[in-house]
Amino acid sequence: MIPPQEASARRREIEDKLKQEEETLSFIRDSLEKSDQLTKNMVSILSSFESRLMKLENSIIPVHKQTENLQRLQENVEKTLSCLDHVISYYHVDELEAQEEVPLEHLPEGVLQDVTRISRWLVEYGRNQDFMNVYYQIRSSQLDRSIKGLKEHFRKSSSSSGVPYSPAIPNKRKDTPTKKPIKRPGRDDTLDVETDAYIHCVSAFVKLAQSEYQLLMDVIPEHHQKKTFDSLIQDALDGLMLEGENIVSAARKAIIRHDFSAVLTVFPILRHLKQTKPEFDQVLQGTAASTKNKLPGLITSMETVGAKALEDFADNIKNDPDKEYNMPKDGTVHELTSNAILFLQQLLDFQETAGAMLASQETSSSATSYSSEFSKRLLSTYICKVLGNLQLNLLSKSKVYEDPALSAIFLHNNYNYILKLVAVTQKTAERSYREHIEQQIQTYQRSWLKVTDYIAEKNLPVFQPGVKLRDKERQMIKERFKGFNDGLEELCKIQKAWAIPDMEQRDKIRQAQKNIVRETYGAFLHRYGSVPFTKNPEKYIKYRVEQVGDMIDRLFDTSA
Image (cartoon, rainbow, N blue to C red; front, side, top):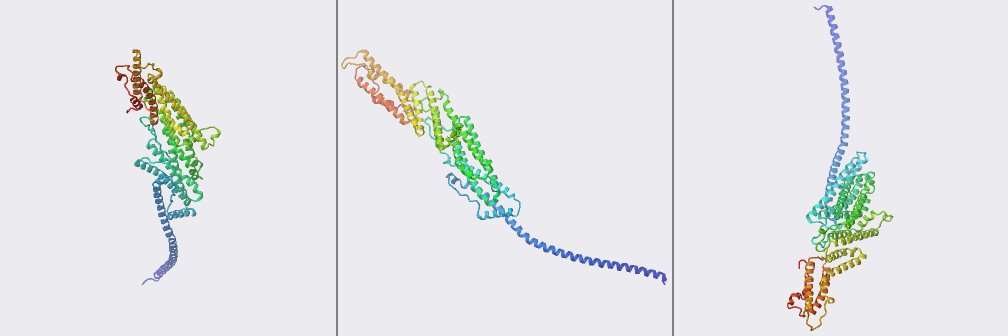
């Protein structure tokens, strides 16, 4: 049996444990209630978050899809622009050559509308506006590639089909009367192609720049258009200006070499730049002053180098040295004359341009606002100066010949060659040159006096008909026949090797000389042909009148 005290202690212990368990149970019950409440709150939060997430998803997915569509449209636009520029660089070459106005289509209407919407969306919603920089960089690259593509296409088409005709470059290649036609140094077909290509690229730049600005107006906000366009055209414009400066630099080097024909490359380019300048100025409205001044600067450089070339050319004509080895042995047109006239003839293709070059160097007040007529007068004065220098130089060169007759033929040929240009450009000087030509013909004809003087009537003795000739008289007749024969043979042999390139002048001089000699010889032969002055008449009467004429007809003809 358990003692009462021990039982009481055990009961208290059990009651204490029971009380603790009840407290623990109560705590657990409270914790469960709190946990349930937290769970309910969490479920409520999650439900609310899920609802909001669904709403956000419903809003974002259409935006995402729209963004994908816009990105795809932008890629299509870039590809379309690239293809268009590639086509533009090749497609309109023939139209540009024909100088026709060709409207350039920007983009398909739908694509352009999409690009415009993208631009407005980016601007209106305050998005990043770097797209304008990206736009001008892409379009600048395409414009530059288009110009280079056109130039390359022009070169290839020219090399495969020969040098094309260009209305910008009159191609007048005239043969000179020298034995070998002088080829213009520096003005070969390759250089003509380069010049032609540059001229077409300048025209293409204006057209493409106009097209770019029209496209830009639809895409770029108005207050950014001028600045963006200025940046867009810089690479292509700088490329054209650099190539133009290279042409000027090459012309300066040609002047130093006295290769003046090569400088003629500048003339068609300068003329085209001046003709295109109004369109240039219109296209570049609103651009920076440095951009607007690029073309006028290039024009000034070309005018300066052109004027320098003209000045040095005139001095070179005046100071060309008299060297015997450089003189034509047959008295034909001197290389200096043929080159000078060829240069002036080609210069006449660019009368207004050349006159403006000369006017640009004038310091007088009248030159500050020179007109077309003023430029032409300056060019006319310049041509007179060159021809005057040439005439003085030719007179000096003619003294190299020991034979006055050959000297006269030389001056005749050169004056006659100059006359072809003078008859077109210097009407007042035409009469003077014709007089110079006649003077040289008369000087040449005097060379035949040593032949005809032997048989001239004024130098013949008087014989009485039917009276027997004395030995002295027979000897005199023999000497006259022999002197005429020897002189005729010598002159025909020498002058056969001389040259008169102008067929009309050659026939005229032959005929005039033939008439004089045949008439004089015919009279002499008629008078003494039947006189018994020798036992061997065939020794002295070697030629009939017709034979003498035939011999003179073979003058100035090495092939006869």
